[in-house]
Length: 112
Image (cartoon, rainbow, N blue to C red; front, side, top):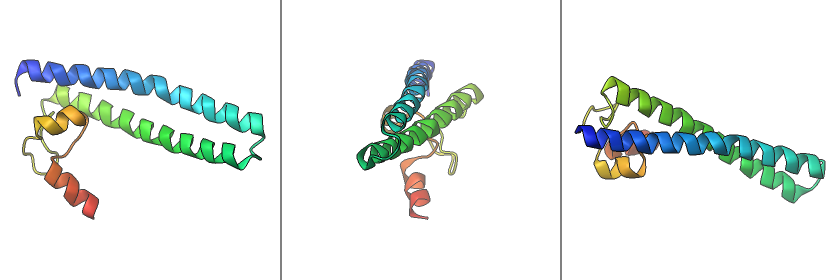
C-alpha cells in the first residue's frame, strides 16, 4: 500500500474515531434520561433503552477496533489479514477501514 492510500485510511479512521467518540456519550445520555423520565416502568421506553445499550456496546467495540487499526497503521501492518497475512482488499477496507481480517478469514471466524 502506498503512502497516499495509507494516509487516506488514516484519515478515514480518525474521522470514524471522532464520530464514535461523540456518539457514545450521547447514547448513554439518551438511555439515562429515558429511564429516569419513565421510572423504567414503561415497556416501550425500556425496550428503547435496551436498543440504545446494544448500540452503545457496538459503538464501543468499533472504537476499540479503530484504535487497533490506527496502531496497525503505526506498526506498518495495516491492510494485512491478522490470520493469513494476505492483503485485505481495498474494497473491504473502504467499507470497514478498521477490519483485521480478509473476507475469507472473516467468514471462517464467523462460521466457528
